[in-house]
Amino acid sequence: MQWIAMLTMLIDHIGIVWFPDSPVWRIVGRLAFPIYTWYVALGMSRTRSLPNYIRRLAWLALASQIPFSLLFNTWDVNVIGTFAVSVFALYWMEKMPRNNPLRYLIPAAAAVLMEWIGFDYGAYGLLLLAVYRYAEGIAIPALHFMLNIAYLLWHPAPIQMFSIAPSLVFASPGAVRPLDRPPVPRWLWRSFYPVHLAALYILAAVIP
Image 1 (cartoon, one colour):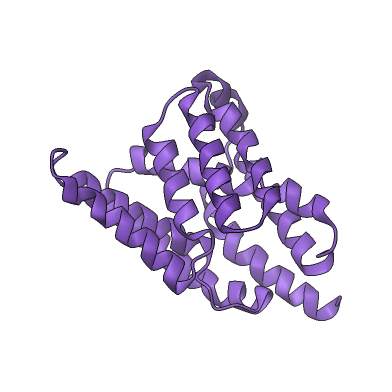
Image 2 (image 1 turned 180 degrees about the vertical axis):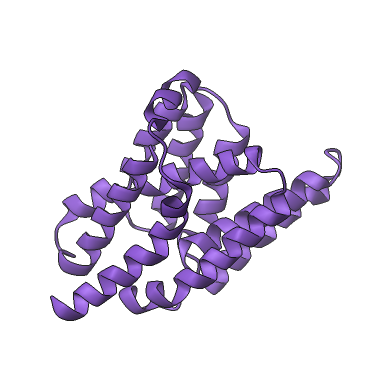
């Protein structure tokens, strides 16, 4: 699944840069974000230290921001920044007692902040991460579908509905494990996002 995430993200970004009028590239690219989000949720569960995990995401977001801004001509925060803030919000929510209703103000404030400042995927990214972290079985694609409907009402981007495909796979716990072989080397998985953005920016300067 990691290979699929990287390949479909690359296809998506190639489409944005060179084929903006062709929706096929963007449709294929809708597979990438849910898979990356799924692995962030897995990372939250498997890491020995969530604060260290958040710091790694924050550093990766910083390293990715300049190539992201240059390639897409925007100063919105890149998607790794969205993951960093989302994991931070859920981490602090989970540290508060379950019977304290104020615990939900933390992710709510993070969602508003990301929409206000301008984060890639914004509140949608945080909510999808929450779905993957807390939901199980058929609830995963069901909640993802409802989230896509809400996103469609907020952002007129109907191709986002194609992003539900990975959630149909994640609904079956046994279906994910075989797809994870062979695993992507950790250095490649972590560096691919900023490196491919920088490479595409250089190529775009050479091949307009």
